[in-house]
Length: 285
Image 1 (cartoon, rainbow, N blue to C red):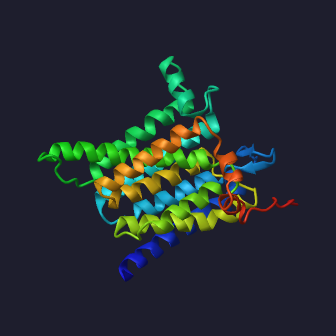
Image 2 (cartoon, one colour):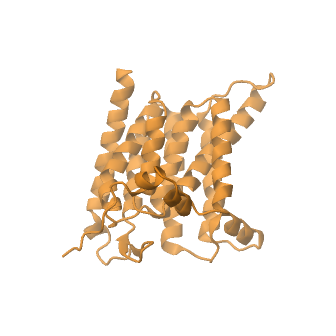
Image 3 (cartoon, rainbow, N blue to C red):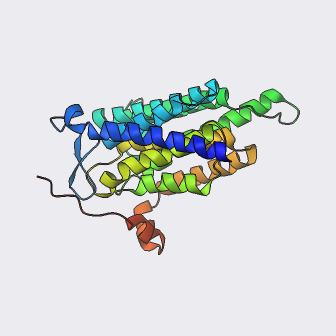
């Protein structure tokens, strides 16, 4: 157990330090404020938090000892962050939500959101195929590998999408990531390292996020969700993967019909948790 906690602490330190360094470099990285965007209330916030989180989580993934774990974590986290960055900075098309992007793709319209719909699942499936060591299913190792690859890849891609859906209010997606880590087992090896990394990057970026000075954007939310998904894929059994994927699919489909924000604001407990720590943005100089 001590070894797992040490790995989690190492991941936390790497994630915190890297994310804090990138976020603190905003004056140099974005001197002209090209990453400034309006948030839900119309206030101007910076997207620098997204690259900070993606960089922090990728740095943690690079520290994984087992090569196939490292490949899975780095490829999914970096790809999700990069595709999210493309959507944040070069957004094209008016399609919104999974249904809108799929409809655009069906019409032959390639949008930046459509690239995420195609790219993140593809990388997630590849990472799952490399990282998982599946047990046979119905006596067939090949069938077991195929099923586990689909389930684990779906969890990674679904987690990336869900965190993006939650990133509609300051701190909400970061809180979801922290809660997901806290409610799950510490894990061992790379899973423990990633769990600590998620907590570390959240700790580094939460103050500015909750203050309404920065936001994750697609870059940070997709990367955070992908890291959560890989952490689950590395340690969950087949039944747990199936249950997690079913929940992710249900929530994604529900998001097409109902507003998560309205549900949260109407639910005691969730409402207070969502608002906890949130404060007005500093007036600045």
